[in-house]
Amino acid sequence: MMRWIVGSSLKFRFLVVAVAAALMYFGMERIRSMPVDVFPEFAPPLVEIQTEGIGMTAAEVEDLITLPLEELLRGTPELDILRSKSVTGLSAIRIIFKMGIDQLHARQLVQERLALAAHTLPLSAGAPIMLQPLSATSRTMKIGITSKEHNLVDLSMTAYWTIKFRLMQVPGVANVPIWGERIKLLAVLVDPELLRVYDLTLSDVEKAVSEALEFSALPYSKHAKLQTEGFIDTPNQRLALRYVLPVFEAQDLAKIPLEGHDGKSVLLGKVAEVKWDTWPMIGDAVVNGGPGLMMIVEKLPWANTLDVTRGVDEALAALKPGLSGIEIDAQIFRPATFIELALRNLTSALLIGCLLVIIVLGAFLFEWRAALISVVAIPLSLVAGALVLYVRGTTINTMVLAGFVIAVGEVDGRHHSRGLARGSKRHRLCHADRGGDVDTGLPHGRPVGRLLPTPGPLLRARRAGLDGDRPDRHSGAGPDASGLGGDRAP
Image (cartoon, rainbow, N blue to C red; front, side, top):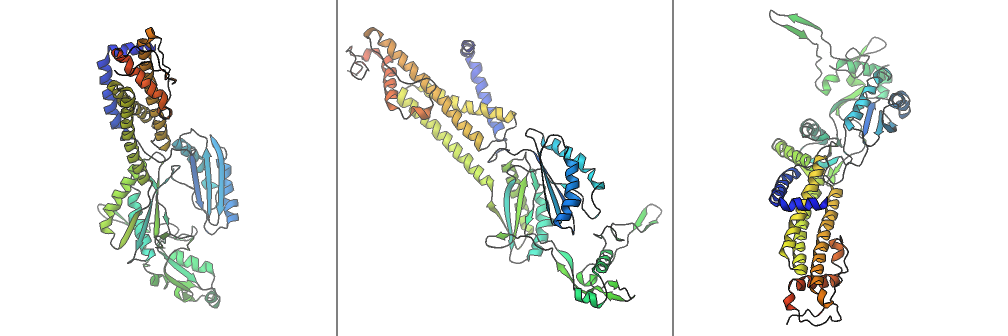
């Protein structure tokens, strides 16, 4: 079989050269579009579900939310591990599937079972939310946001409504959580002593505040959802009516009346402090030694780290003219920098390696054909291997690059050993009539890394190959102590 392949290649050598050139051209074009990352996707498919339980303790979240959801999800096909965590006001369930299952198929299996969970959870609990699929090394960038002109609340609103929404449009971005986020909201800080003085309860305050707003967070209040209060028919259309309360600022909310148990009304501002504030903080962010916000860009499992990073940089550059007084630092954590540096180093290493191969072959064999074969065979082998990975949808990472380096050593080592063996054979044929013999001491297939530390056999083989090609230079003397025969130039 091998004899037929070699014979056919020699017979149709021009066709082989044309195919090799086409392979190099199209291979380089495809390799440029391959996804590049630091590490491969080593984690099994994972689906995470989070459910809010407003006002619930950790024990109540576990009993009322986590356990019912676990019972529904326990029979999911291809399920490997089911983990859960219940904290104050939040339930988190992580479903780990067996290796090899498709990520989107796993999410579909979970979504089918979540549809049944709405009837088993309490009314005060939120809807179970399935988080976005994330890569094993999901954090693509960390972006620090600081400002000397805006406070952290206003900065958080700009980051949430402007920067985050723009970054979510970048292809490959799964989520952009914000550390240290302070969302602006109306806060009612009730004084218990004043409630006791006016004979009011906290439930009275909650009910009055929820009904004063256009959209209530209490499911049992009158304004739990937006309602149409009627309509007006005109000759060509129907106009819907909606009742909107005039609550726009904190002072407006402080003027709403609270109905006491004795029939008297008390303004909300007399029993509570109403102001613009934020939620209670759990943790915070420090940017360059000072207060600020930290935006974490997380990517999808099939996203390209370099493409995502370039897209985020372009989005930030487009937003910069409209973000006066806000400083954005996108260099805090940026794996794409490591990848770009590694690719540049790899390119330099390959060029230097090819140059060293040419020098080694020229110094040891003095054959330009052997050097040319190595220069062509090494990049052609790498491109062919990269094309196979491209067809299989593999991501270029450190493991793949390490495999390429080892493969280059094997390919070049086999070519070296064959060239040295051919030179030794020619030498033995030229000295057969004189009884001269040479032992290269080199087995076939030894890599370059193992050839370099053995200069003695290499030098003997080099001189054997040279003198075997030039029999007229031998003096005809018997073999000397080195075993080279009398092969000194006259």
